[in-house]
Image (cartoon, rainbow, N blue to C red; front, side, top):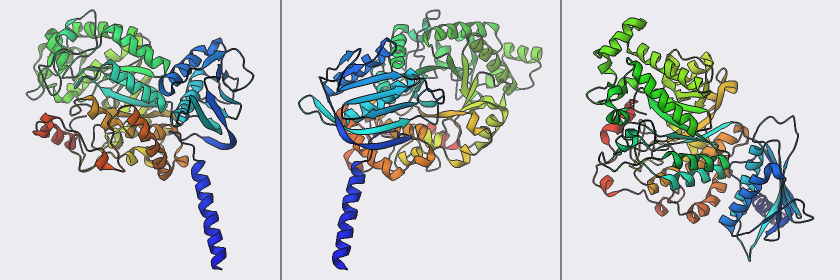
Length: 550
């Protein structure tokens, strides 16, 4: 009996070892994956076979293999052996634009898709596998797999706030690289807010020259912003990675920086939030903002503009005595300030739609009068689930980005001090991974109206690139799997194992990331100001816990 038990234990041990070796080290986890026999030898003799229709994708694959593994791979019209083929196929049963098949066999690697976006997803999977293997004398050995894959959500997003602290073009490109690595495809760029205006508008140059001065931690910081040439460069960089860049031009609130530059369009504010709003009572305000949006439209081919439209009540008290606003209320029979806000939002939304753009806005618009046509609501107030239900009931498309668990400026552990908590709760990678909950996905209309999910990175207390990395990594990986992989296929334990294997990639990239499995290896970084207690802003922290700021 003892001998037989030992044999059984040994057999189980080797079976577990074999299974462990057959785990596909991809994030997000594919829909289907089957291990095959043998391996493919990737070397400088390997060729990429692609016709003219997908030549740019072949060039991207070439560039990434050289960049990360030092491999110079040629392209070819046809090859006899040891090649990578990129092929668009006619599969009418597959409507998902990101659907792809990846087959790695001893003689070839085949990536097939119905659309270029799917081919790119397959290339991203291949590159992720390649980057996790060592290079020995310009050779990489890849295990054979057959993969079929597609995402559950079309919107897989990350938002970066650069009004409060500015990070610059190269950092944004690095984030876009990691988004592509994890198959995230929507970059929401928060470019205007109270501390600074970060996008050049040629018709109104003072928006950046004056409005670009300052940050959340230093009101006298030199003007920092993106020129229109910078914007074009970043948008093109993102497009090569099949990422849409969506600008946010916040209105009618969060307008302090703009009003510093052009006070004639200010609607005033409140004692705590001075010069917080644009003036909805002046016709010139609508002409001014529409001209800004016209330039924004030219710069961003995504055909989506986010107008914020949140937290207006912080600073609209001056509207009660502003002559232009009071005249508007009488002429349009607007009974209160929320009605004025709704009027403003509808007019600016109409301007955006006239530019053939979709209107995106935070969830405050659900209580307004905006039509559901070409409109998407971003549900951010996790403590107000009734707003999400109302949005779905009214027929709005929705992107899920609730504070808990998708605000990456929240701390990752209870002991961390740089960032926010909500009633003592923080945002661990596990809570990101388990989102969305069944309570959300079971809501009426959820299957048809929820476009996807997005993490938001607000930067009041994120003052430099290292702190930004620390907040984003490794939670971005959990976000990717939550947005891509069906809930029934998710396995938190297996994900943890795959996640750990990605840490060496973070290190190789020079990222200072949070290691939740070895916290002593990655202690939280504090700037000198934060060590002195100047940040985080205790007043802002208290307001956040009360639900009064984003």
